[in-house]
Image (tube, protein in one colour):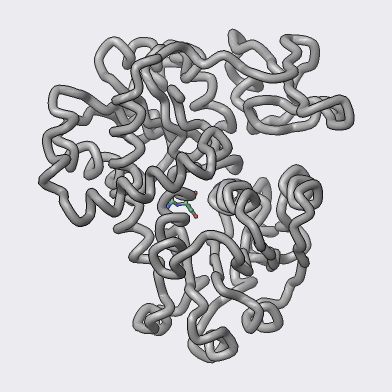
Length: 359
Ligand code: NCD
């Protein structure tokens, strides 16, 4: 594997390997503290970030490597109109691995096609966030002792919440998963993720009631309403206080239900919940750094670095993606690739998952 663009790039065995490495790194940091000496990580953050960016920087430093990068396109050549493709090519001459966060869906995939060095997706628009999922899986594993036979409730902005999309797709491969989708009607989980749940025969229910769902859950995953993805602030204002977890509501949960959140929180979890032993959101930050260390080490130790080439049943430049949040809508030189699993499935844009039929 050269890149981590989507959580499905990792098998269940790969994920367990990364968790095992991360736990070893927590217990024996000195074994790893110079293993990436002489290597440089470039953090290209086109969108605001605190924990993900710092987590990657701290991860690379924990391995003895260097870091360069920018936050916000304004301070880079992007403000002069440089494409993701060109920025990635330039950076690949100066660094050994790229970590990219971008507001356009599929931007890290476009970068991975341009360069031979590994590219890690650190969040692309409302689409995916595989390294947050690694932090989440490590946390669930360490707290619950397993990743199978779990009932997970995901609550809040399931439409634009990229962390939820990646987490559910990862968990779908473990036995005994049950899912409770808790959101307002406008913020339901995208159809392509619901279709995947259905195809894999995973039982799920959709509800607007957090109170009703709470007693069922082994894991509650709260999310922020993603203000920056809304076209209308009126809609955001109407939905922003949809869910607030406080001690009163938490009293309905099982004694060993863990409460997670990718952070930042706005007001979805009252501060009083932080002292409850079930609150795990700050542990996710701790685990995330070690999972990123394990991932960077693994990608840099891998020898077969080659440019990303789309695999599977692909058509090139036959359809145009009309998703206005897709990287192909703003960068002309990118080829429009669509893929389908088999003939019973629609072709989907490989960058953002939009259906070809929807054009
Ligand atoms: C999340 C993100 O950026 O998608 N934050 C993070 O990376 N920890 C969640 C969010 O911004 O709400």
